[in-house]
Image 1 (tube, rainbow, N blue to C red):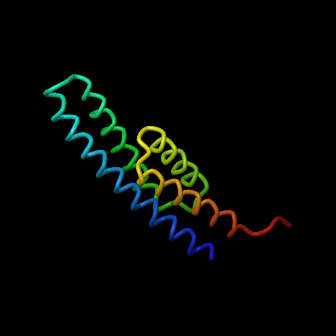
Image 2 (image 1 turned 90 degrees about the vertical axis):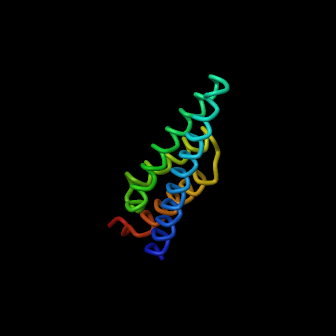
Image 3 (image 1 turned 60 degrees about the horizontal axis):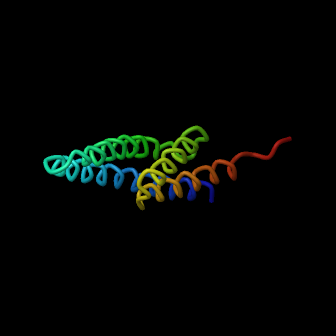
Amino acid sequence: MANTLSYVGYILALIGGILMIIFGIVALAVGSVGLIFTPIAALGILYGIALIILGIIAAIGARYVSTTMWGITLLVVGIIGLLTGGTIAALLVVIGAILGLISRTSSSPPPP
């Protein structure tokens, strides 16, 4: 069961990371076009860059979701993504990280 949870966590975190990258590219493109009309569109460019960086971290870390360090890292990346934009991609990363951490705790042997 722990292996299944880590695989589902991997898939969810990977899909979330890819979606974050796609949403970041879209926000970057829209912010760049909007910069012609108003300087406030620079915030869209910054948001797009931040989302791309978070998405790359999530996509790379999805492979190691069942380790404690990467599970916590993905959880933090997902929470930052939820706080900055609240996209479904960040929610998928958070759910994937939680499933990876649960699989880690359920697969460890009991203490002697």
